[in-house]
Length: 267
View 1: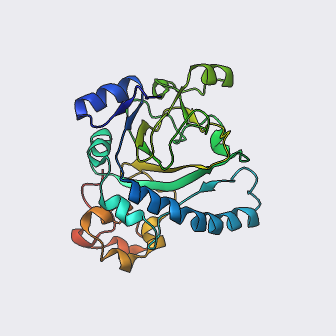
View 2: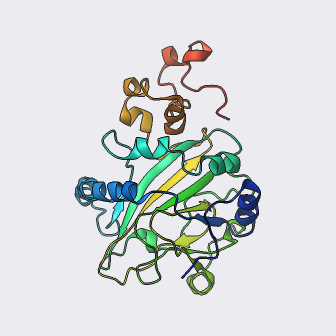
View 3: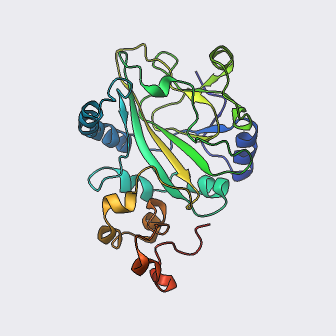
């Protein structure tokens, strides 16, 4: 089943048109299969680490199959960001420099009912025409109706109030997409993960990019290390948030421009 929102390529005018009207678009064949398999092969171990913490902290019940903050030196993170998938679209949508707000994953299984199956949007405050956040969903297994392809309510990025369940599931469309595709959507779009009725996992990366002044869900520069960041190229330093940090003390605050933690051009 071909998704009517799917493109192999789309110029920025087409991107604007589709995003303005519907709020989401699919780019097919964005990632090569070998890289997708590399990502998939890393998820089980990463999930076990996070799952133990979820259970220890008493939030395991509705977190099953969810992995948050996969920004680690040993993972695929840097390779993914260096390839600049949809970078032109992100920069265009956010009107300039941007940073990674969050990078996680969902392993949707038949016995799971995580919170992402609830109707939600990924930005807490409705921002209307002022674009602050854009989402990328990296398709790691074919998304089908049977295995829980995500519901997206087209046009709901223009709607502040949450739709009721009956209206949403009657009118939402499904992100039918092949492995290696990228679904790009406005963070204001109301959506929900579908129920997986198959015996195989349905996996995806979930990413949010924001204008640099928007607070990250996790302090990635501090988590990865300030010293480690000095060895990264300028693109990775920008996207990971090294150019838009908050000073901790007066000594960090009172610095010449080139050494400031919040650099020029960050909005």
